[in-house]
Length: 317
Image (tube, rainbow, N blue to C red):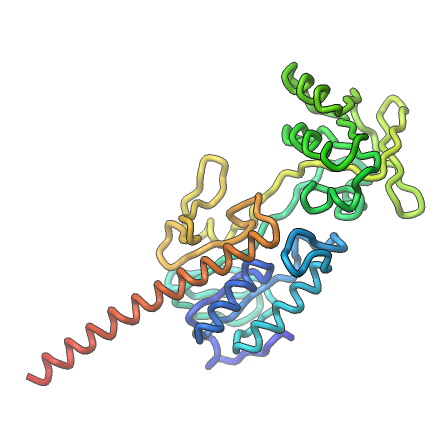
Protein backbone atom coordinates (compact mmCIF):
# COMPACT_ATOMS: atom_id res chain seq x y z
CA UNK A 1 0.00 0.00 0.00
CA UNK A 2 1.31 3.45 -0.93
CA UNK A 3 0.83 5.98 1.86
CA UNK A 4 -0.49 9.46 1.12
CA UNK A 5 1.53 12.25 2.68
CA UNK A 6 0.97 15.79 3.84
CA UNK A 7 3.30 18.58 4.91
CA UNK A 8 3.56 17.51 8.55
CA UNK A 9 4.76 14.06 7.47
CA UNK A 10 7.74 15.18 5.42
CA UNK A 11 10.50 15.27 8.04
CA UNK A 12 12.23 11.93 8.61
CA UNK A 13 15.19 10.41 10.38
CA UNK A 14 15.99 8.44 7.24
CA UNK A 15 14.83 8.48 3.62
CA UNK A 16 15.50 5.14 1.94
CA UNK A 17 15.59 5.37 -1.85
CA UNK A 18 14.79 2.01 -3.45
CA UNK A 19 12.53 -0.79 -2.23
CA UNK A 20 14.33 -3.92 -3.32
CA UNK A 21 15.80 -6.42 -0.87
CA UNK A 22 18.46 -3.96 0.34
CA UNK A 23 16.14 -0.99 0.82
CA UNK A 24 13.36 -2.96 2.50
CA UNK A 25 15.79 -4.76 4.84
CA UNK A 26 17.24 -1.40 5.84
CA UNK A 27 13.78 0.05 6.42
CA UNK A 28 12.76 -2.97 8.51
CA UNK A 29 15.70 -2.61 10.89
CA UNK A 30 15.26 1.17 11.16
CA UNK A 31 11.53 0.84 11.76
CA UNK A 32 12.16 -1.64 14.55
CA UNK A 33 14.64 0.87 15.99
CA UNK A 34 11.72 3.35 16.22
CA UNK A 35 13.12 5.65 13.59
CA UNK A 36 10.83 7.75 11.43
CA UNK A 37 11.47 6.33 7.97
CA UNK A 38 10.06 6.65 4.47
CA UNK A 39 10.90 4.40 1.55
CA UNK A 40 10.67 5.86 -1.97
CA UNK A 41 10.56 3.48 -4.91
CA UNK A 42 10.05 3.93 -8.66
CA UNK A 43 8.63 0.43 -9.13
CA UNK A 44 11.10 -1.08 -11.62
CA UNK A 45 12.96 -3.95 -9.91
CA UNK A 46 15.85 -5.51 -11.78
CA UNK A 47 14.62 -9.08 -11.30
CA UNK A 48 11.04 -8.43 -12.41
CA UNK A 49 11.39 -10.66 -15.53
CA UNK A 50 12.31 -13.69 -13.40
CA UNK A 51 9.57 -16.06 -12.30
CA UNK A 52 11.44 -17.19 -9.18
CA UNK A 53 14.45 -16.23 -7.10
CA UNK A 54 16.84 -18.72 -5.55
CA UNK A 55 19.55 -18.96 -2.93
CA UNK A 56 17.62 -16.97 -0.30
CA UNK A 57 17.37 -19.13 2.82
CA UNK A 58 13.69 -19.85 3.69
CA UNK A 59 12.53 -18.02 0.55
CA UNK A 60 14.08 -20.22 -2.17
CA UNK A 61 11.83 -20.39 -5.23
CA UNK A 62 9.66 -17.45 -4.19
CA UNK A 63 8.58 -15.06 -6.99
CA UNK A 64 10.57 -11.81 -6.64
CA UNK A 65 7.41 -9.70 -6.60
CA UNK A 66 6.07 -11.74 -3.67
CA UNK A 67 9.22 -11.11 -1.65
CA UNK A 68 8.78 -7.36 -2.17
CA UNK A 69 5.09 -7.51 -1.23
CA UNK A 70 5.94 -9.36 1.98
CA UNK A 71 8.69 -6.86 2.71
CA UNK A 72 6.44 -3.85 2.27
CA UNK A 73 3.84 -5.40 4.58
CA UNK A 74 6.50 -6.03 7.21
CA UNK A 75 7.90 -2.49 7.22
CA UNK A 76 4.42 -0.98 7.43
CA UNK A 77 3.87 -2.89 10.69
CA UNK A 78 6.64 -0.75 12.19
CA UNK A 79 5.26 2.55 10.95
CA UNK A 80 7.56 2.89 7.93
CA UNK A 81 5.91 4.79 5.08
CA UNK A 82 6.12 3.64 1.48
CA UNK A 83 5.86 6.10 -1.38
CA UNK A 84 5.72 5.20 -5.04
CA UNK A 85 7.76 7.81 -6.86
CA UNK A 86 11.06 8.79 -8.39
CA UNK A 87 13.65 11.04 -6.76
CA UNK A 88 14.26 14.08 -8.91
CA UNK A 89 16.88 15.83 -6.81
CA UNK A 90 18.56 15.66 -3.43
CA UNK A 91 19.91 18.83 -1.86
CA UNK A 92 22.55 18.75 0.86
CA UNK A 93 20.99 18.60 4.21
CA UNK A 94 18.96 16.52 2.97
CA UNK A 95 15.94 17.71 1.00
CA UNK A 96 14.71 14.88 -1.21
CA UNK A 97 12.51 16.20 -4.01
CA UNK A 98 10.21 13.72 -5.75
CA UNK A 99 9.01 14.11 -9.33
CA UNK A 100 5.66 15.88 -9.12
CA UNK A 101 5.54 15.27 -5.40
CA UNK A 102 6.61 16.56 -1.99
CA UNK A 103 10.06 17.43 -0.69
CA UNK A 104 11.10 15.03 2.06
CA UNK A 105 13.43 16.23 4.77
CA UNK A 106 15.93 13.64 5.98
CA UNK A 107 18.63 13.55 8.62
CA UNK A 108 20.26 10.64 6.78
CA UNK A 109 19.95 9.15 3.30
CA UNK A 110 20.24 5.48 2.37
CA UNK A 111 20.33 4.72 -1.35
CA UNK A 112 19.47 1.22 -2.58
CA UNK A 113 18.43 1.89 -6.18
CA UNK A 114 20.14 -1.16 -7.67
CA UNK A 115 21.36 -1.49 -11.24
CA UNK A 116 20.03 -2.32 -14.67
CA UNK A 117 21.26 -4.86 -17.18
CA UNK A 118 22.33 -3.52 -20.56
CA UNK A 119 21.64 -6.41 -22.93
CA UNK A 120 23.32 -7.14 -26.28
CA UNK A 121 21.35 -6.27 -29.42
CA UNK A 122 20.69 -9.85 -30.46
CA UNK A 123 17.07 -10.43 -31.56
CA UNK A 124 15.25 -12.55 -29.01
CA UNK A 125 17.47 -11.78 -26.05
CA UNK A 126 15.33 -9.09 -24.44
CA UNK A 127 12.10 -11.01 -25.05
CA UNK A 128 13.40 -14.13 -23.27
CA UNK A 129 15.47 -12.36 -20.60
CA UNK A 130 14.88 -13.89 -17.17
CA UNK A 131 13.05 -16.88 -18.68
CA UNK A 132 15.43 -19.02 -20.71
CA UNK A 133 18.00 -16.31 -21.42
CA UNK A 134 19.78 -16.08 -18.08
CA UNK A 135 22.72 -14.51 -16.30
CA UNK A 136 23.55 -16.11 -12.97
CA UNK A 137 24.43 -19.83 -12.82
CA UNK A 138 23.92 -19.82 -9.06
CA UNK A 139 20.43 -18.37 -9.47
CA UNK A 140 19.25 -20.50 -12.41
CA UNK A 141 21.73 -23.31 -13.05
CA UNK A 142 19.87 -25.89 -10.97
CA UNK A 143 16.61 -25.30 -12.86
CA UNK A 144 18.21 -25.92 -16.27
CA UNK A 145 20.59 -28.64 -15.16
CA UNK A 146 21.34 -31.61 -17.44
CA UNK A 147 20.00 -29.77 -20.49
CA UNK A 148 21.81 -28.40 -23.57
CA UNK A 149 23.08 -24.97 -22.52
CA UNK A 150 24.72 -22.16 -24.44
CA UNK A 151 26.80 -19.19 -23.39
CA UNK A 152 26.77 -16.14 -25.65
CA UNK A 153 30.19 -14.59 -26.18
CA UNK A 154 29.14 -10.98 -25.74
CA UNK A 155 31.39 -10.19 -22.76
CA UNK A 156 34.76 -11.44 -21.41
CA UNK A 157 32.85 -12.85 -18.44
CA UNK A 158 31.30 -15.44 -20.77
CA UNK A 159 34.34 -17.70 -20.41
CA UNK A 160 33.93 -17.86 -16.62
CA UNK A 161 30.19 -18.48 -17.05
CA UNK A 162 30.82 -21.41 -19.37
CA UNK A 163 33.36 -22.95 -17.00
CA UNK A 164 30.92 -22.61 -14.11
CA UNK A 165 27.98 -24.08 -15.99
CA UNK A 166 29.76 -27.39 -16.51
CA UNK A 167 28.80 -28.13 -12.91
CA UNK A 168 25.15 -28.29 -13.99
CA UNK A 169 25.34 -29.83 -17.47
CA UNK A 170 27.62 -32.02 -19.57
CA UNK A 171 26.44 -30.20 -22.72
CA UNK A 172 27.69 -26.63 -22.56
CA UNK A 173 28.63 -24.66 -25.66
CA UNK A 174 30.33 -21.27 -25.82
CA UNK A 175 29.29 -19.34 -28.93
CA UNK A 176 32.13 -16.93 -29.53
CA UNK A 177 30.03 -14.27 -31.38
CA UNK A 178 32.16 -11.10 -30.90
CA UNK A 179 34.47 -12.56 -28.25
CA UNK A 180 38.17 -13.07 -29.04
CA UNK A 181 39.32 -16.08 -27.06
CA UNK A 182 42.92 -16.28 -25.94
CA UNK A 183 44.85 -19.54 -26.31
CA UNK A 184 44.61 -19.91 -22.53
CA UNK A 185 40.80 -19.46 -22.69
CA UNK A 186 40.53 -22.17 -25.32
CA UNK A 187 42.74 -24.52 -23.36
CA UNK A 188 40.68 -24.07 -20.18
CA UNK A 189 37.34 -24.46 -21.96
CA UNK A 190 38.40 -27.57 -23.84
CA UNK A 191 39.89 -29.11 -20.70
CA UNK A 192 36.62 -28.50 -18.90
CA UNK A 193 34.63 -30.13 -21.72
CA UNK A 194 33.03 -26.94 -23.04
CA UNK A 195 32.53 -27.02 -26.80
CA UNK A 196 33.45 -23.84 -28.72
CA UNK A 197 31.31 -22.75 -31.67
CA UNK A 198 32.80 -19.99 -33.80
CA UNK A 199 30.90 -17.31 -35.68
CA UNK A 200 28.62 -14.34 -35.07
CA UNK A 201 25.09 -14.88 -33.78
CA UNK A 202 22.16 -13.73 -35.89
CA UNK A 203 19.22 -14.33 -33.54
CA UNK A 204 17.70 -16.63 -30.96
CA UNK A 205 15.23 -19.18 -32.26
CA UNK A 206 12.00 -18.94 -30.28
CA UNK A 207 8.98 -21.15 -30.98
CA UNK A 208 5.75 -21.60 -29.01
CA UNK A 209 6.97 -19.14 -26.39
CA UNK A 210 10.19 -21.04 -25.66
CA UNK A 211 13.81 -20.82 -26.65
CA UNK A 212 14.68 -23.56 -29.12
CA UNK A 213 18.17 -22.60 -30.19
CA UNK A 214 20.65 -20.07 -31.52
CA UNK A 215 21.02 -19.29 -35.22
CA UNK A 216 24.34 -18.02 -36.52
CA UNK A 217 24.72 -15.62 -39.43
CA UNK A 218 25.86 -18.47 -41.69
CA UNK A 219 22.52 -20.22 -41.14
CA UNK A 220 23.67 -22.87 -38.68
CA UNK A 221 21.21 -23.51 -35.84
CA UNK A 222 22.45 -24.83 -32.52
CA UNK A 223 19.59 -26.32 -30.47
CA UNK A 224 19.70 -25.13 -26.85
CA UNK A 225 17.22 -25.32 -23.97
CA UNK A 226 18.64 -22.18 -22.31
CA UNK A 227 21.43 -19.70 -22.88
CA UNK A 228 23.42 -17.55 -20.51
CA UNK A 229 25.01 -14.19 -21.14
CA UNK A 230 26.95 -11.65 -19.13
CA UNK A 231 25.19 -8.26 -19.39
CA UNK A 232 26.81 -4.91 -18.87
CA UNK A 233 25.71 -3.92 -15.37
CA UNK A 234 24.99 -0.21 -14.98
CA UNK A 235 24.43 1.19 -11.48
CA UNK A 236 21.38 3.39 -11.03
CA UNK A 237 23.43 5.78 -8.96
CA UNK A 238 22.26 9.16 -10.21
CA UNK A 239 21.31 10.27 -6.68
CA UNK A 240 24.75 9.36 -5.35
CA UNK A 241 26.55 10.88 -8.33
CA UNK A 242 24.76 14.22 -7.99
CA UNK A 243 25.68 14.34 -4.31
CA UNK A 244 29.36 13.94 -5.26
CA UNK A 245 30.05 10.49 -3.81
CA UNK A 246 33.50 9.17 -4.64
CA UNK A 247 33.79 6.41 -7.25
CA UNK A 248 36.42 3.79 -8.03
CA UNK A 249 38.25 3.40 -11.34
CA UNK A 250 35.46 1.20 -12.69
CA UNK A 251 32.86 3.89 -12.03
CA UNK A 252 31.16 2.36 -8.98
CA UNK A 253 30.45 4.39 -5.84
CA UNK A 254 32.90 3.58 -3.05
CA UNK A 255 31.63 2.66 0.41
CA UNK A 256 33.12 1.27 3.58
CA UNK A 257 31.98 -2.11 4.91
CA UNK A 258 28.86 -0.54 6.46
CA UNK A 259 27.80 1.16 3.22
CA UNK A 260 28.96 4.64 4.24
CA UNK A 261 29.88 6.79 1.23
CA UNK A 262 32.35 9.68 1.08
CA UNK A 263 29.49 12.17 1.60
CA UNK A 264 28.58 12.60 5.28
CA UNK A 265 25.13 11.27 6.09
CA UNK A 266 24.82 9.17 2.92
CA UNK A 267 24.88 5.37 2.82
CA UNK A 268 24.39 2.97 -0.08
CA UNK A 269 23.56 -0.74 -0.16
CA UNK A 270 22.87 -3.57 -2.59
CA UNK A 271 23.50 -3.66 -6.33
CA UNK A 272 23.89 0.11 -6.68
CA UNK A 273 27.38 -0.34 -5.22
CA UNK A 274 27.96 -4.09 -5.64
CA UNK A 275 27.10 -5.72 -8.99
CA UNK A 276 27.82 -9.19 -7.57
CA UNK A 277 25.28 -9.02 -4.75
CA UNK A 278 22.49 -11.58 -5.05
CA UNK A 279 19.13 -10.95 -3.37
CA UNK A 280 20.16 -12.46 -0.04
CA UNK A 281 23.46 -10.55 -0.10
CA UNK A 282 21.71 -7.28 -0.90
CA UNK A 283 19.34 -7.81 2.01
CA UNK A 284 22.31 -8.29 4.33
CA UNK A 285 24.05 -5.12 3.15
CA UNK A 286 20.83 -3.18 3.64
CA UNK A 287 20.56 -4.39 7.21
CA UNK A 288 24.22 -3.59 7.92
CA UNK A 289 23.87 -0.10 6.47
CA UNK A 290 20.74 0.55 8.53
CA UNK A 291 22.53 -0.45 11.72
CA UNK A 292 25.35 1.97 10.90
CA UNK A 293 22.89 4.76 10.06
CA UNK A 294 21.09 4.28 13.36
CA UNK A 295 24.38 4.30 15.28
CA UNK A 296 25.35 7.54 13.53
CA UNK A 297 22.03 9.12 14.51
CA UNK A 298 22.51 8.00 18.11
CA UNK A 299 25.98 9.57 18.17
CA UNK A 300 24.50 12.84 16.91
CA UNK A 301 21.70 12.73 19.47
CA UNK A 302 24.15 12.07 22.31
CA UNK A 303 26.34 15.01 21.23
CA UNK A 304 23.29 17.29 21.08
CA UNK A 305 22.10 16.11 24.49
CA UNK A 306 25.52 16.77 26.03
CA UNK A 307 25.65 20.26 24.52
CA UNK A 308 22.15 21.07 25.82
CA UNK A 309 23.06 19.79 29.26
CA UNK A 310 26.20 21.89 29.34
CA UNK A 311 24.35 24.96 28.09
CA UNK A 312 21.68 24.49 30.78
CA UNK A 313 24.37 24.13 33.46
CA UNK A 314 26.00 27.38 32.35
CA UNK A 315 22.70 29.28 32.45
CA UNK A 316 21.91 27.91 35.89
CA UNK A 317 25.08 29.38 37.41
